Image (cartoon, rainbow, N blue to C red; front, side, top):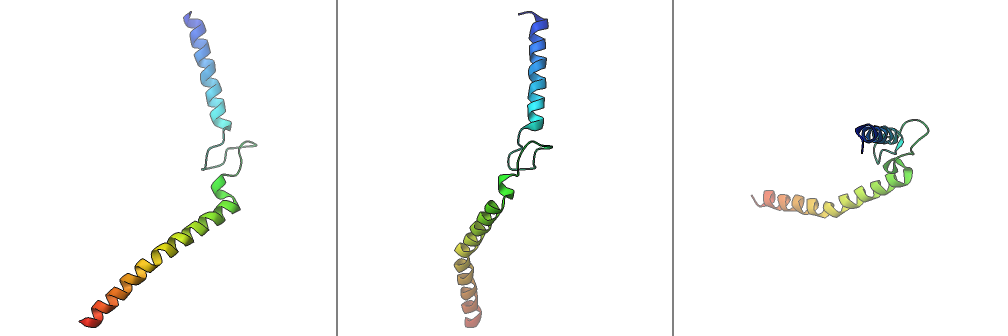
Amino acid sequence: MRDRLFFSIVTGAAVVMIALALVWPQGYGARSPGPFGHTPIQQTPEMKAAMARADAAEARKHQPVFGARAATQGLRTASH
């Protein structure tokens, strides 16, 4: 393959990849610019509510452990 043809193809592929990177949705982070992209999944009201429920469940799961520690500390201080 001639160098002129090869490097033309490589340059064209690079330009296409850069253009695609400018308009492709940016995952769960910031929204893509202009008319492209959509609201990130983690910023939708449904997902925010689900994450809040998960956080509350995690806090409830660990709450008895912290309560048991506090009760144990209370017993230790009462016995001294």
